[in-house]
Length: 373
Image (cartoon, rainbow, N blue to C red; front, top):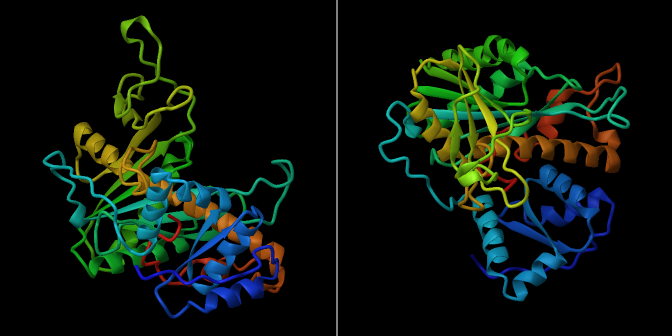
């Protein structure tokens, strides 16, 4: 990387046009702008300006920068990992070896989908703030690399807007097909209850299936539900002591009859008890064995890229959750700093597709890097 260029800027500014003007200076170059300050209120407007200009940013607080200056190699390593990901790099790969027999990453589009809902006043009552879907996929040249976007829809709507989903999945299939042949599509979905499994099958997986057919792609589909907010707890009682499950553990007893279902504890808990997530397969055109499915999902928990240790859920799903949160953050910033720019219909309701195109990092196009790293 070339030597950095230092610029002075008043990061306490609440004028969106000033932030946009400052970032636009770097719009036509491959640049990552590090914003270093001690102002916690500046983060939302930084990310809003990033979305509107397409210039990637990394926001660092003074304390974090000082830790690096004082010789904290782990902090420096994390920052460098983030910058490398945002620059289009990849920090490490997962070697599945011979454990995957039916899943070939080079032939598979892996999609992860999550939804974030507005809370309203005191977590109840009506709200005009939209729900946000976060969608990631390995559509980039390296099938180990994930990126994605978010989209807006009606408030507190758990079902994903089928039209939006088809549009974005079709874009990801078209992009992935530039680099490899796609024979399988695996959807990893979060934030649904057992009563909504049919909705995933009949709406979301059907929309993905139709997107593939529209492109003349004969893909086999796999649908996986990851439930991270369940009430089930598992403990290790070996040697008469009660402790957290060891990382990379799986539990199959206590699962529902008639389902391919098990519990996974991929991560190590540093405080309290590690919480297991429940894995449920609701569609499996590949006929995967439980062992292969577990190897696959455990491998995905190691693809966070900022650290090599496993996270609690598959990393693509973690990224989808972060994207949905980013969509909420930049919408609230837009409402605070430039409310008149929110696209609306004649009846005053929000035009969700236009809003999605406005606030996504790469306009209506798929991002070419994981800009939320």
